[in-house]
Image 1: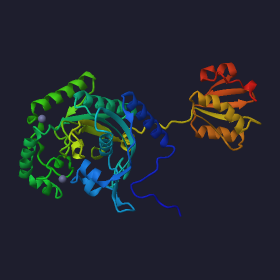
Image 2: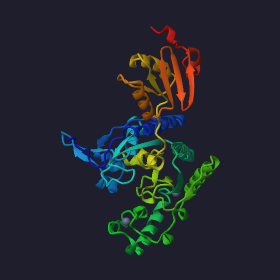
Image 3: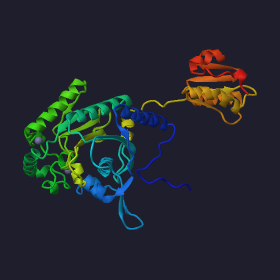
Image 4: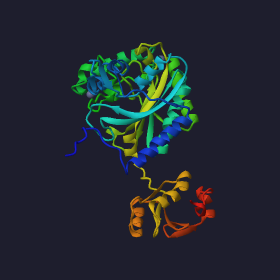
Amino acid sequence: MIIRSPKGTGVIGPPRSARWREVLALWEDLSGVYGYELIVTPVFEFTELFERGVGETNEVVTKQMYTFADRRGRSLSLRPEGTAGVMRAYLAQGGTGRWKVAYSGPMFRYEQPQGGRRRQFWQIGVECVGSSSAAADVEVIALAEEFLSAVGVENQLLINSLGDGECRGAHLEDMKAAMARSIADLCSSHRDVVELNPLRILDCKLCRPDHETLPDIAEYWCGPCRDHFGEVRQGLDDLGIAYRRSSRLVRGLDYYSRTTFEYVSTTLETSQSTVLGGGRYDGLAETLGGRPVPGVGFAGGIDRMLMAAPGESVGMDVFLVGEKEITAFDLMEWAAPLRRAGLRVAFELDPRSVKAQFKAATRSSARYVGVVSGVELEMREGRNRQTLGPEDLEKWGMKAFDPETRP
Ligand SMILES: [Zn+2]
Ligand SMILES: [Zn+2]
């Protein structure tokens, strides 16, 4: 009997993985183009990192982490997100200067699997550490925008500013009072946390406070926070990036400040429509024991993006069929220059009749079928056929190839 995979895990394999490869390659390219260098952080860390970096009272830490003791009894956890590990790494290498880093990899959360979100899920993300400028916020959003549009996710960008230590306190107090007044409209698990973290209620799908009566953070912003948000909006306007301000877009933890944003798919159902989220976390470095360091970034789940934009599976470019005495080894020689030219080329490895090879070509959904007979290659695309000799192969990037001189 084959052993099942644990609930909430899965395999990304063919044919679906072709699209994954395309999207991950796009991420590597685009994040590089924006000047973000690759970072790879540990998949498991000391549990304390996430208790501090994600928040001890955060549900992700209290209920969703895979936490275990190693062989010496130290508490380790699989990473539920990427930012804490990146900031820890930044502080460990001195905690100074500008860091623009991009990551891609699996994260782990023990929660009920839902659309596009499994217990092991794949996130891409960036962190821009060391700049408090609104330009950093705008650049991060511009990258997210370009990536999602390249992937083909139809979306809406929501933005907000959470204020900072100067101005958010008064808002929080008024929010607590407002929530206390509508305690009957809150779900059972949130009635008790009004005092602790009233903002979490805005995120809850079950709580139904009257949003019209809740205080809007915009009324509380201090001058610098108002200016910062104005610069972010101006920057987005200048780049032609559309957005909507949402006063409900909040983060419950103190180390988040100012800009926060979310990309919501317009094609997925609302309870699972967030494909990417991010914002500023100017207080995180201090929470982890470092000096104050500003930072802004985002993370997005690939599974959900591909639910919103499944795309078309990418087939082979060329499938080679060998006539008569042509062997797989001959085909491999014909394939070599095509592959060097960047074409995806396949052929049958086992001896097969010409008819069986054509069937395999159809299954591969290759754009071209290349029929090799002796020294000629006939390229077929639908009804179009073209016999290619060595001189014709130039357009395929096969200049150096001359079958006559094959050993
Ligand atoms: Zn609730
Ligand atoms: Zn402020």
